[in-house]
Length: 197
Image (cartoon, rainbow, N blue to C red; front, side, top):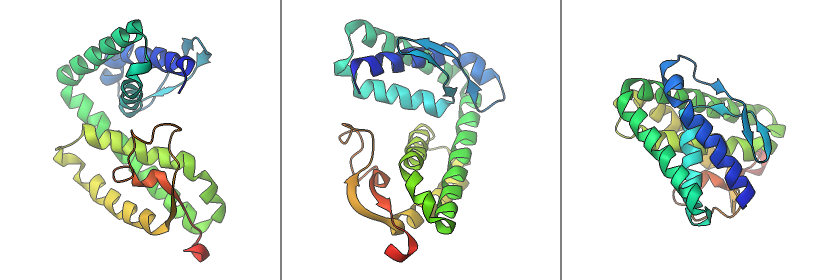
């Protein structure tokens, strides 16, 4: 990710953090935003998972950020920590809803692959859903209320593992060290059609 992309991501992430308290007080899982950035106007959909993933990405590239950008990222971290503590019930409720929505999306994609070979071509974008699930799972570590989604995820992962072939990295360019194969296995390979398995 180059400096311009990181700058844009930081501006979007700051905008999300700026709306975090209002988002937690609302009942909608997805919050449509309009953000003016150095790269033009962006229209991200805010969820806790998207915010946390953005922050993880910015921390991964922290050595590339300017001193001012690192200070701004630290401020975002502070806003997140404050809201996580102040609105813990809403925080966990929204994360559980987002986990369920992403696990359902993952399930529907695997079902679609079983029906249509063309769905294999969408794996790159769908693998991102599985990455987002992992971000949410880390945030919900120890939360027993998400047990049903975790059981469903184990079944879906087993199904996907049987379909994957090759071990070529398919994740974000230059981020292999962020997503090692033993942890982010779904980014190392692509699914095969039924006759290829």
